[in-house]
Length: 104
Image (cartoon, rainbow, N blue to C red; front, side, top):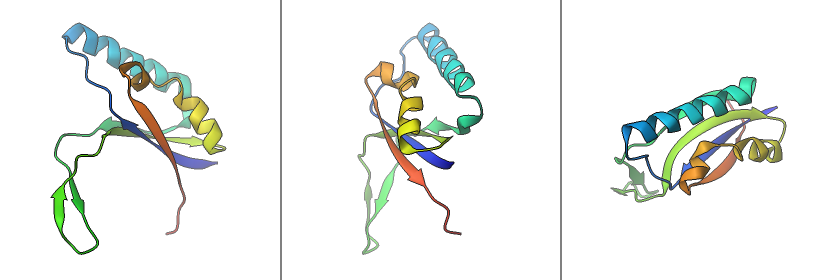
């Protein structure tokens, strides 16, 4: 078993309070169906973001990353299968999946 970070890219927040509640309910349902595979439900990212370059310079970050979650799975393929049910995909977002390995 390994941990996999799901990085959400793109999408948008629902505009009305009713749509926002429906969206949060869909997330809760998805996390419930994943059960023990959920290591960290994660959070959305705010607009404030910076990139630090190897020379130490700092610039505004305009990446498409909008949030994350961390799942535990047997393989990256299994993590991708689990990610297919993610509500973020309904908002025309995509998900990048990265395996995490412990070195410390």
